[in-house]
Amino acid sequence: MEPLRHATLPAGIRSRMVEGINGLTMHVLEAGEAGRPAVLLLHGFPELAYSWRRVMLPLAEAGFHVIAPDQRGYGRTTGWNDAYDADLRPFALLNLIRDQLALLVALGIARLHAVIGHDFGSPVAAHCALVRPDVFRRVALMSAPFAGPPAIGAAQRAPVSDIAKDLAALPRPRKHYHWYYATRAANGDLMAAPQGLPAFIRAYYHHKSGDWTGNDVFPLKGWTAEELAKLPTYYVMDIAETMPQTVAHAMPTPQQVAACPWLTEEELAVYAQEYGRSGFQGGLNWYRTRFAGTNMEMEAFAGRRIEVPACFIAGSQDWGVQQAPGALRKMETEACADWRGTHLVPGAGHWVQQEKAAETVALLRDFLAQA
Image (tube, rainbow, N blue to C red; front, top):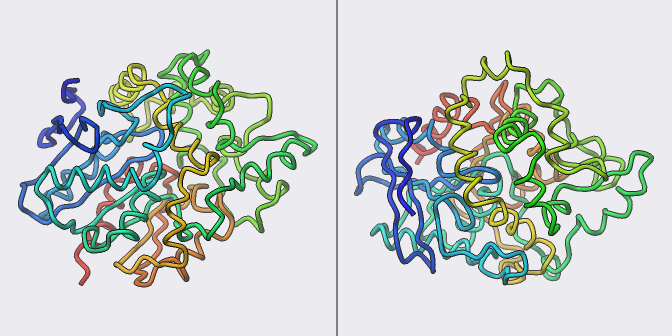
C-alpha cells in the first residue's frame, strides 16, 4: 500500500507508511516537526486520518508535532483481517490502545502532549488516558462522551441487545444502529448502496451534520425504547431499512452539495476511494466487539477515573452527545478527575472538526496551552 497522494491533502501534511505496529503497517498523516510536543488524533466511523485535514496544519503552526493514523480496520493501514468470522480480539479496546503505543514507539515518542479522539476514536482516546496516563498526558474527547470504564460484568453484555425487543415492539418498529452494524449483512449493504458509494457517504455525512435541519438535540430521559425512538433514524433505524436506505431520505440537494464548504466533491471522492477499496468491515468490527464480550479486560479498570486533564468538544447539533442518556453528565462529574470543560460549537453537527475547523482549532489550542 502506498501513502496517500491526493490533490485535496493540504500542502504541509505528510503521508507515510509505518511498519511493525502491533502486527500492522499503519498509514499515518503528520504535520509539524518531529521533536516538538506531540499530539495524536484518532478518527471514528466512517472516517479516516484524512478527517483531521482541516485541523492538522493549524495545530502544527501552534508548535505541535501532529500525528493522525488510519486506525486498525481503516484506510491504507494493512495487517488486519476483514473476514466476518475472523477473531474479533484484535479489535478489542485494549489492543487498539496497544496499536497507539506501538506507533509512538516506532516514532520515538515517549510521551504525548495530548491524545484527541472523535466519534469511536473518543473511547479509544479515553481508555488510552485511563490506562496509560504516563504516556497520554491529557485527552480531548469529541462527539462521544466517556462515561467511565465498564463495571464488573458489564462488558459481557450489550445494552443494545437488551433494548432490541422493545424497539422492535414500538408502533413504528425500530432497531439500534449498533445492532445493525454488527450484522453479517451490514458491510455488503454499505458497499452495494443503491445510490452508489459516493452518494451514500454524502448522505450519511449530511444527515448527521449541522446542515440537516432535523438535528434539534435535547437530553433523553432514559435508556428506554420510547426515549431512544426520539433519536434520528441514523441512530435508531426503521426496522426494515438498511443504512443506505435510511440516509437516502436525507440526501442533500445539488444546491446544498455545491454550498457545502467542509466536504467538497473532491474531498468526498477520497472517502469513496478509500472505502471502495477497503470496505467497511474493519470499522464495523469495532461495533461488533460490544456484542461479543471482547472488552472484558477493561473491567480491570472499573471505578478508575481519567486523572489527566480532559475536555469535551462537539457540535451543538450533534446527537452523538445525547445518544447515551446520562453519559455526558457522568463524564463531567464522575469519569474524569481533572475536568477542563464542555464545549458545544454552534452550528456544527457530528463532524465538528470538519464542519467548524477554525472553532475546533481555537478550543483545542486553548486546551493544549493550559497548565
